[in-house]
Length: 83
Image (cartoon, rainbow, N blue to C red; front, side, top):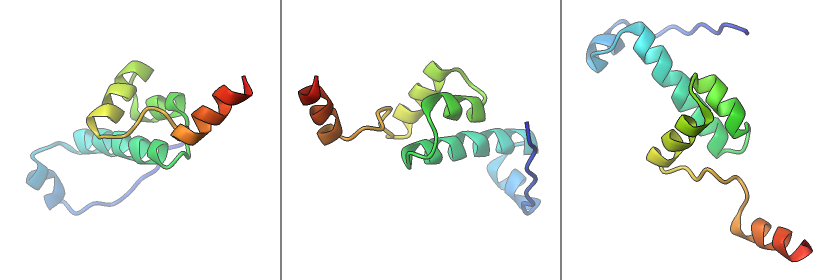
């Protein structure tokens, strides 16, 4: 696994009332959610990045208002027509 480091202002942690580890965890979940919503990663990849089970990641997506389905309604209907 590769480690990525970013610099954040020190006051971010006090403003959010969170430790650097808690902020890092939230950033991983946020990134996974955004990347999944954009169709860049799968649910499994998102769950791995977020550090949670696939079921928990699906709940996180739902809580964020992101559909767990990456196919559009038209794509699903076309797939059903093709059998």
